[in-house]
Length: 146
Image (cartoon, rainbow, N blue to C red; front, top):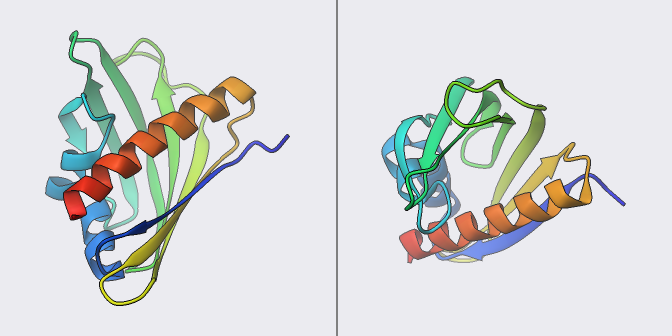
């Protein structure tokens, strides 16, 4: 069993438009998190290397926090960053660090293929949970591009 989740989606926008949507803070906050989550606190600037974080809030008020470092940016085709959940939400200790890459390529006129790989997940439950989460995010992102 591999410790990587790989997801691929063809999106209804150019590679440059997709890259802008997934790297610009005011755009990222619109699609980050599951469909029913909000992101009340964040530093989601993936347009440059450096730290990032997001506090996501579920409808019942439960908050989750994830953070990391953007390690590589190659517009409009590639982003790499680290990822770690904070146990118990904001203020909690940061858990195991994992790694994420996103590749974007043209897929015809006004379409782009986005491939996300989330590495170092370790367990079947972690892989399944992250796959569900990223699929929900992909759906939200795609709706925002349509």
